Image (cartoon, rainbow, N blue to C red; front, top):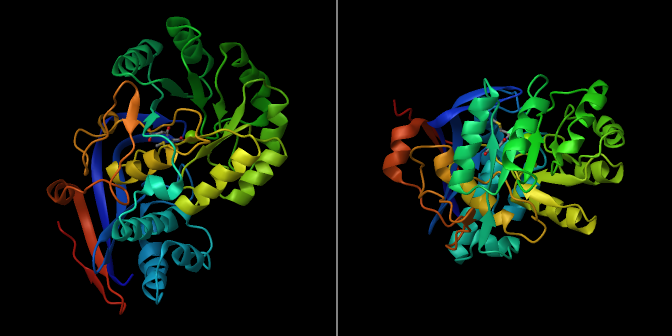
Length: 378
Ligand code: SMG
Ligand code: MG
């Protein structure tokens, strides 16, 4: 494969409703898209970094800088680029998994489109559809929350995840459990908002029979999660903490996590995410696909990966209309609580050039010789 250039594009997409977590409220999704162009095809990747470093250290501007200054030049300097060589050459740079994952995804997409292979086949997916859960933000009141959950259950979502924080935990969980009964698949996500001193309080969630509590403590506190696991019966599931396969092994071995949330962007790409899937399977640890408010580009890859065998819990892979009035690809639609895994080569979705232009805020093209052409569109 010969690469002709890489386009870095910033877009801004209004969300259908504000999404509040313990670290802040998102109104718009600002995204970096990467397009890798070869002689015969093009591949797309989406960077899941947010506008501000609240979920993790990366943010949109660092991702653009990292891609433009280091990752794209390293990729374009490869004599025979492919996804494995790309991953290896990116490893010389510390950190920045979300920037790396975006470019790696685009290389994988162009490579698979050239070969005519769907990403699902490359990853070893075993399902044609995947069950869809939905992540429900923190609200101003319990009635407002119940109204939102009613709507999602009417849509057909098969699992509800409630965002929690100190002051918004027991009451919303109790209200949802009482209204919908013990059959509802229910879990919570704290996005690091608690400390080990809250263990007795978090144990009060135990009677509600939650599938899991996601990332209660800070990212680097694996020992704290292992200690908390001894004090609560709800299974602990790590998200932010799991930054690589090596960290996943560590967390599993010390008893810090019984279930793992996989986000390819958080761990540096689909290759590392696949390793985590495989090693969790070997350790008897179920995994599920997380979400980062992706457009259709990122969603396509996540849905393909969620069809792998050890993804045994519904993911935060919701339908496109849960996020955007109009996506930049054909929308992912809920059918009886499930999304279809794309079947075309690579990501299997097509970017709508007209919609893309509408949401674009800046574009630059990096060519092999290193020339950077900046072309802000507005
Ligand atoms: O994509 O549906 C989605 C969002 C799912 O809750 C979600 N993601 O910590 O798991 C998480 C959060 C991270 C992003 S919050 C802005
Ligand atoms: Mg999470």
